Length: 150
Length: 246
Length: 86
Length: 60
Image 1 (tube, each protein chain N blue to C red):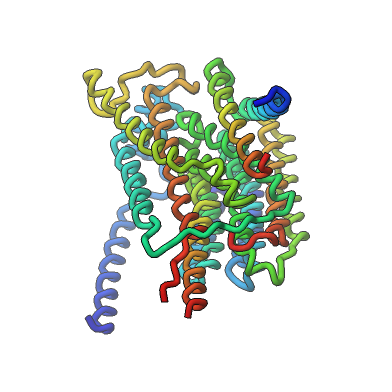
Image 2: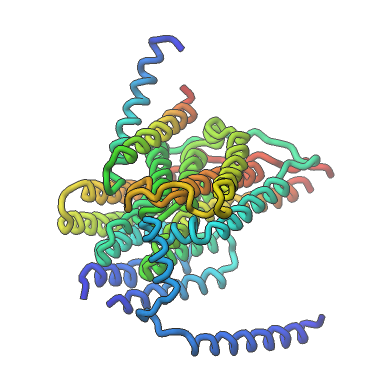
């Protein structure tokens, strides 16, 4: 029994399952928020899996997701700016909750690994993840108001 | 063909496929078993050539010829897109309107672009050591450039993306792969045989013989191909308009 | 434990893939596809295939949505121009 | 380019290069000479992209 894998399974079933429900139903403004949250939750899952399987090189996946996940949300925010302009999605509670999960996982992993360059890599991934998702949330809530057909 | 007949045909073909799949599943080895005849041989071969990532060894050493085929598919697909999405005679270009993006989003873009580019190049360079390789890293690097469109302005992207350079880079890196393969023939072995370079020390950047070179060629090819592909899509979506000839 | 993780990931992939097929609007489909890509990447990692997972992440998280939404924009603009011209 | 504009440009480039080279050191698992050389080259390329992107966006 591996606690890291258990935590990953819980976040996967509860968190990503809920975002899957959110992206499958409801108005567009809810779906884009759910898409953002799914990448914000999958990144800590990948970190937990890397620790659970004891494979430090799997951290690269989490790093790439922390970089590209927010970019994907920015793509939606930018190209759907017209549709979202009337009633911009604001989901700061869910965003900060997902950021809290990410921060908690990163700090737990930092505590579990020996201090060194691997710790810095973990902290960097966490910073990119949280910063990216907060910026993406902000972009969804009206960061592209000045964009017209461009 | 009438809809009724079509439905019958689909049902017959579907049930035949289902029967074959069920028959195949009944004969499969157990899930997660410990007998992997192909896997054991692939790992042995990759360790003999001191390549830490067995997948990279399969892709760029044991099955390097298959990767050449995959690269040609991507190359041909991008070529087809370039031909299909060109500007035709009854279309004209409209200047895209400038976009004003919120300052935090713009700052995030300018900060993350170099980091993502460096990560993409890191994934390419460490393809033989850690998960990843030319394809993955190339896509990450190409995506990082398009952050400029997403997080800033289409014209900003156009300023840093001279499309001709990427088209030439695409062709050059595709031929670099073939040339590396031909070098094996010239050295007296076989096409794409990994016998040219010393295998190096296990788990270092120079290990694996020609695997890192082929990885770099594929990485550059994929990055250039994705940039060219997205340039055509952006052209069509942002700039090219039909002339209203009514 | 590992089997439970595989089962959860497989279930999520099956559900999100079905939803992606059932959704008719291309924009909403692109959103479901983005989530499907992320779940697939987790499934590949759980099955110890991080190389494939990394490919899925690189392609599915930003590139596919961008291509799909650019195509949708082009088609819609074309329809608008037609209506405006008439 | 006049010397008065060349200095800030060089400073910006060097700042980016240093930050990205340090980032490379964080990413890699083992450090040897070849790794450092490749990292320096890659950081130089990414720093070039960073500077080009900032110029393209702000227009200066």
